Image (cartoon, rainbow, N blue to C red; front, side, top):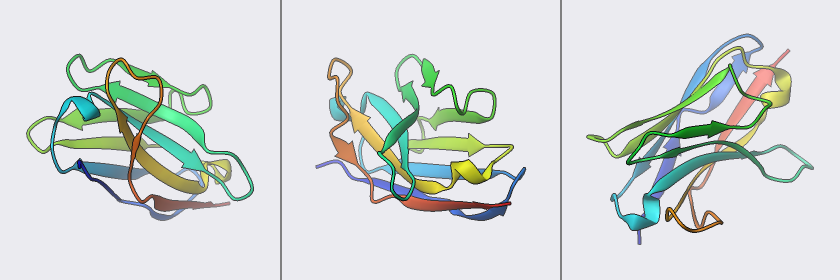
Length: 119
């Protein structure tokens, strides 16, 4: 079973930056597409960004476009989420996820990392 391990969360002031990392224990068909999701207290989990390993194609939620960048390092089997111009409303637990390329739903999840943006 492939494991996803997030790191890089923390406390930052509004306008600041953080970079999240998601290390995968292996690169298999089950991790063809990697994504970041977040869940704020009292809210549903929401999509943030995704990237396809092979092509590097990316997609973003409208709320983070222009501020967040998802990328991957093939040599390190790691996906990153660079978050700039952070806002208090970005405060949430951020989860790394993976799915096969033709699956609709993400079915591999990391444990999550807390991001707190103070005003």
